[in-house]
Length: 184
Image (cartoon, rainbow, N blue to C red; front, side, top):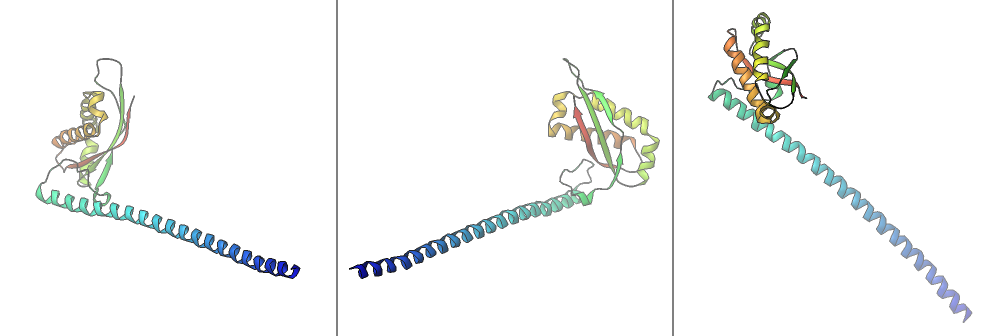
């Protein structure tokens, strides 16, 4: 009988070792699968972002080219790519009082004009005082509500561009870019 107990214990020990080893292998395999699934998921998510970003650029480029062909409009096209931007002419900072009934509101704006050609910058240099006056008049005629929205900023941009284009003769201003826009 004593020999029987010894043989049973000897048989149980290797079985426990086998089941322990098997459990360890299963845990390692599951961990490897989780890591692989995480890597594949991350790759797919990052890959989708790049595809989503590249598709609109192609569409924007096509739309931009179609708009240029169909109309020679002077309004700023918000879907233009950075590579399509022409010569930039920076203007000094404008600080104006906004039109308001109650309280004092200030607008501090710095902008750059996109020019059609380099020769236009000479004309703008000569007319700096007049340009600044026109921009100040336009900005100070706006209320807080008119300029806080994206649409409002676009309207101001178009109005400034149209006004300045009416004053110049050596070319055209193709766009206006705000580099600072602070309301206080």
